[in-house]
Structures are given as structure tokens and as C-alpha cells.
Figure 1 (tube, rainbow, N blue to C red):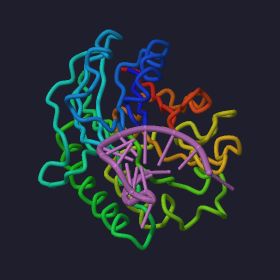
Figure 2 (cartoon, chains in turn yellow, blue):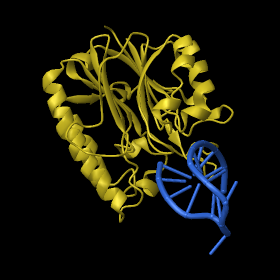
Figure 3 (cartoon, rainbow, N blue to C red):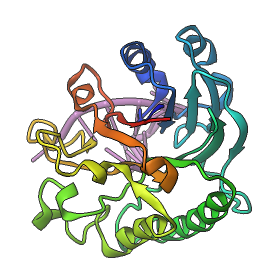
Figure 4 (tube, protein in one colour):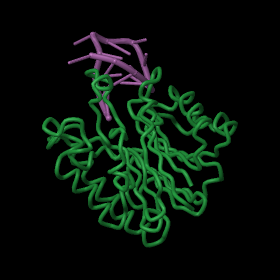
Length: 257
DNA sequence: ATGGTGGTGTCACCA
């Protein structure tokens, strides 16, 4: 089973990119973030023509998540149960016997802002939700844009990034608390693989792409039975060099199921 | 220093 995540930064703009990518990478499931579409405007038909069923949870202008799959996603649940939040950031469904939870974690703004406090609180809610889900589902994948670079080597310039937003110790601790539940960051299973590009996001500003000034903030976490059979996790970095790209690229993992 | 959305602003807001 191949499963991928992609923050598309507007599905309205990026739909041609997504359709083309799916044609050459016919993954079993794809989690999208920052669709920036209301549910009425979700491109159900165009995706169906490419062979994908969709479930989605969107809002105008900001946020918005979706799950695409070649089989009908079952038992969809939007949001974190028990957590009232107008920001559409979480969507779960069962795909081919795997419970898949797509997440768009808050960015956090700057360290001294309300957005940062919201980010840390949001991660605590996600933690408790995932604890429940792990108890219910042996096969669980949690994937998306976490807006956290877990280690210095997941940044282009540790001296610059350490302690800043996306890399601060509380954010890293929040991500680690998810792993401590029994989830594996599948990327790190292949840390010793040579020639692999290390980042998943490059800011549109400052010529970040040209300088390869990126971060690894998009992750695919898997429960133990899935991590054991994970054979690959890579970033499709080439997507960042296309015309009118998202600032994130797809991350794809392969499980021998 | 860029890019996307909503919508016409001295654009603001978000990433």
C-alpha cells in the first residue's frame, strides 16, 4: 500500500498538479492539506475521473483537509472529537483496512503570539485523540503537515532555525509526545539512505527553493504493525520546481500489506 | 524579497 501527503496551498490552484501527480503516482491514498475550499466547491468529479474517491472538510480561505483513495473511504470523522474548533484541520477515514488520519497542524505564527499557544494546545488535543485511536486501530497512519521540524538535521541551517517557530523545544516535544504513543516517523527508518533530499517545504520568499533553504515538516507516522512493513518514505522534491508550485512537496510511504 | 484568498481597502490576513 502506498500512501502520500501533500499540502497543496489551494486545491483550486493546484488541482492540475494533483491530477498529473496522481496519474504518474497512482497511490492508494493521498491526504491533502490547505485545500482552501468550501465543501460545495470540492472537485469531486475531476478526482473521480482520475480514479479517486474523496472525503473532505473545508472552509473558505484557510485550512481545509481531504482524503483521496482508490477505494471508498469508510467511517469518515472530521475534526478532533470533543474539541470544538472552527478551523478545519483533521479528517480520518478507513482506507483498505487502515485507519488514516490526515492533519494540518497549526503554523503557530511567532513564539509570543496567541497562535503559538493555540498550536501547543491543539497538539495536546491531537495527542489525546491519537491515544484513543491507537487503542481502537492496530493499523493507524497519521500524516500531513505538522509544521514541526523534529531535529536539527531536518532543517537547512540548524544555527539559524534552532529555537525559532517550527523548531522550538515545546513544538518538538509536542511532536515527540505523539511518537511516544507508539507511532514511528517512517522517514527516519531510512535516514542512512544516500542521495535523498531532506526537506518537504521551502518558503516562497527569500529565494528559499533556489538556495535549498527548506525544512522537513510534512510527516507520515505509522503504528508499529505498519512501521514494521514500511519499505520506503521519500519526498517528491521535483514538484517544487514545477510552474506555480505549492510551497510543500508530496511525501510518500510504501507499506508491504 | 512570494503566493493564495476575499474582494475593491491607505488592501488585510495567513503561511
